[in-house]
Image 1 (cartoon, helix red, strand yellow):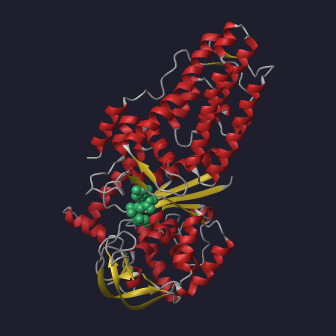
Image 2 (cartoon, rainbow, N blue to C red):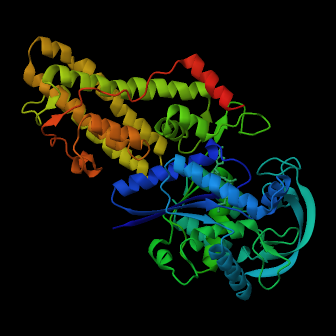
Length: 522
Ligand code: ME8
């Protein structure tokens, strides 16, 4: 079985996770489910990045020790992933001994081989980003990453010799043009950071102590990004007694990250791996942000929206549908209450829900709920729909394989619309009236068959809806529910659809629900 290893960032436990944080994890889970459906042995890693000055401060402000704080946050994170039915294989926390021990060892090793050396650092430090910047990197005297205040600081530090590896990384980029996705972000990294020449990176701190201590010089703690990035291999047992997962799954097939952290993943991480003599990940995909009407989500603006209340009121499938659809491949997405309700009412309730209801209603009315087998004679309209549907399956697969999930969803809804249009074109009620039984049978077959395909196409991100559709159509468990079975079009036999179709998505009263969501943001 081919293997597929994918990761989410490990999140900072600095506050409750909002829908933005949940986005990468939702994306990862959908890709996992898709890959599994395609026959891959998939390993999905997520976790938490628990060290650093910011976490120490958040804990202090809450009157807790950092450990108490991160323990509580880890429980909350796991609760959220459970609610969202995220099927992760491991949840790594950087405060776990299995991780800390290996980070210590990696640091030692890099020191021994001369990649890490002791010096002094003076620069502009951004505390929330835990990153130093040079004067020229600042934007209007502020942090170029987050736009916040920076402080001039000087400290004895260990440095990583980035310059030594810079050319090797440039060669690697040139030989692997699809290493960083999307291309626009690769060009940005290449032109703005790699080409002008890399500075050596400061990889230890002495100004706080909530971190992994440098074994040979314990007044230093390891820089939070060197600590964090290595999670992708420590979780697989790198340098530990049992490294079978490492042998099996490394290199990662894809690291999924937000655009805010592509520099760390696209430059420092590959160089750390080169220094450790390990293969580089195959690809890194940096998606955009989920934005609000008035910019980034922030507590002070009062525009933060969390997954839990949305899921509770509208269901998990609608939530996943919305955030995955809304974020295009290379741009930011926007969350608005209006947009959420519109997508729910139009795409889910009208287009998909009604298609199922109409179909089941007609099969019951015209044939007592029965679909016997593939029709003997098909019309040109039937054939057209079949061909259209075949094309959609291929393009959905292509989009999933290249991480264009929003487009994969849009393509699936093209099939939903096309199938709805097919009802208008074939006018089954006229065929019934005119007693064109054979033609009517064929139309019903084509409707049920395309709904079966739609249910399978949405299964990576709308698990429940997918099953409800297949159940209501009474598609037998097993081979007609698999991804591969979409390759067949003529195998439905002796199907008896439900007599009482259940509404998939009840229509929402727009004004009321917009207010409900606005209240969730307060
Ligand atoms: O950066 N829209 O952790 P973090 C979309 N610990 N995605 C968003 C988002 C938004 N509005 N807000 C956050 C860290 N994200 C480090 C990572 S990895 C070795 C260490 C997602 O808690 C997005 O994936 O700040 C982003 O990269 C990540 O959350 C940042 O999470």
